[in-house]
Image 1: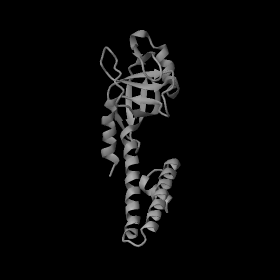
Image 2 (image 1 turned 180 degrees about the vertical axis):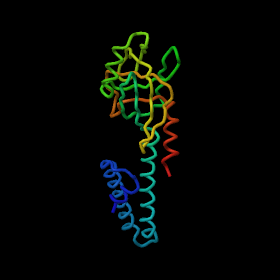
Image 3 (image 1 turned 60 degrees about the vertical axis):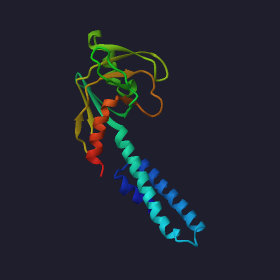
Image 4 (image 1 turned 135 degrees about the vertical axis):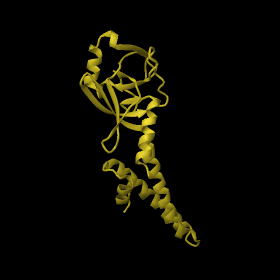
Length: 198
């Protein structure tokens, strides 16, 4: 019963997420059963299943909210090239293009191979070199201003992202993240949360 319940609560077909949620609910049920055995002579055993269900629902709700708030899909366009990739909104990403003051979206080059190649071919007048001292090292990143940046919503609709520069990063961002969106993208994230959370 845990896995069908997890599927219904998550409202998604991602098997790994449903499996994770189902295992979590099963673990909560086992803990509640253990407490019920310990407290068999009190009124608590009748309340524990309800408390366990509430705890499981709260956990799933929190996990879904966290992913809505910080994980987004971004679509970048430049000179007819379009690349789509997942990004993490990083409130610590304060990198700015020094002339315009606009924020910078950092993306692993391997996540946007066509745009990364284009960035290397663009004339210097259309790019900027930004020094950085994070991401496990230091150096310079060559960034460009895209023709369009969109945040893709779960139902297929889209929303324009805040104006920003794109910095292909030839290294690897620590963890499973392929892109770090600036804090300004949180506005798009809040839009999704209002639109899709109940």
